[in-house]
Length: 346
Length: 278
Ligand code: SF4
Image (cartoon, rainbow over all chains, first blue to last red; front, side, top):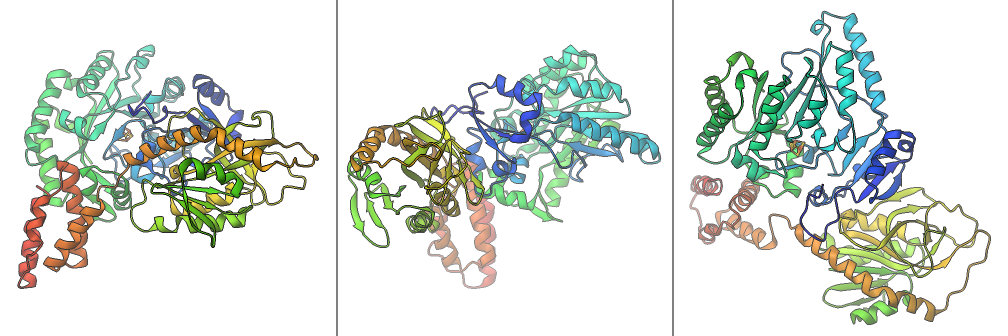
């Protein structure tokens, strides 16, 4: 899992910071025995490391540490208005892994968190308890969202990167199987599809692949799998009957010939995957809370940080005119190859 | 620039010789330097080291300090069997024993040094709990003050174990010669680690360097830009540089351009901006 080819930066997870309370969880042992070369440092609370103010998340990306902690706060959050809720009233998200080893220039996590270190919460069972409680509440009030709950479990990370050291997939699949009134969404840019082949496809588990034109991947999505590999993973799972969504999000302004780039990209999609089998597609242009953008400017050297965005209600994005042009163009091109009713615009 | 803080003159002696540092001042702290290294002898204890750290790092708050780093270098006691006398230890956790505060370096470089934790205490000759691997009288205050100036990956505590501490046993008296040799033996390792840190720090340079700031200021002055326009110019400059990976040299055209009216200035500025965002 080495992400830097600089021979003087240490390996990914050369250090593991462990909360003393996390030591009582079997998962902690499992993880540390897999990463047995790492140096271990004991901490009282993950914020001692994760939320220190004077860190440089840009450099930490070269050699991220791992933090093992017990989540004692909130487990499930109401979905943000910056994301799409598929017309679900009960749209929630949760995070048992925070931060990502991939390195997208536009990733809001870089603006949100003070650190690029990876945080694992090892008390997954508490999440399931809380979810069961929430499901009961919703069941008693069916007028709200027909008693259903939509939960995204990989908002604050690309969790499929970590399945090898934090085996969460089995537990979530079992939970989804036992609780048909919940729909679980996993978002990813990885090409890790093989783990899913160990299970039968579930009606209420959706894998959403974020995909972008090749140029965008090359310029702005460091360390991520190529578009071909992502499309290959998608078509494998579609063939096995898994529910797959696509997120064309964020659509980026990549210079004056953005139209050609996106047109070619959509063409590539229709050639490489059976779009008819895709469950839904979301579209959205780049948008970010203005406070996060300030941190981008302080640390990151990507043009994404310095574009002259407009800020409305604390959220920065392309000026309205450009934004509508981009959305209109991409959605109308997409409608030529995919059922309009399943396109959602964020 | 590498900054070094040592508590005692005897700890610094070998370093001064090894790096060929010249004495620059006696007060408020004894200070030595060459072109790349500044060293201060703080005196023993947290108050002394806090004062000396501020004194040493005061200039880093001005100007560009991304490649600066600071090391608290000296001897310490070992509280358990993890470390032996003579061991060189890169500290990964510093605990202030009295105030129960904790500090963590960001160790991003690949290195072969041993790592351990240290507790800093106010007075050595009383009973205290052995909570960490090592003990000294300075590193927590050093870390707390240094992190007011620098990022955590720029702050290091490097200690050499001079003696094993056991409960209720009187402390050994260490001779000057002994300390000098202990440190001398480890200098090569210490400074190859320092070199690694320095290479890593060079990786992070902010997008706008000093010469960029100068260009922005010149354009802003000659065009009589408002505060908000200057900020926009800075942003546009950074966009151009990050996007095209070259500097917007065409800005030199504006160095001696004096607009006749605000209207003209605004028009020129809009034109300039559109070139930056092309
Ligand atoms: S894959 Fe997602 S979470 Fe990871 S860096 Fe990219 S945008 Fe962020």
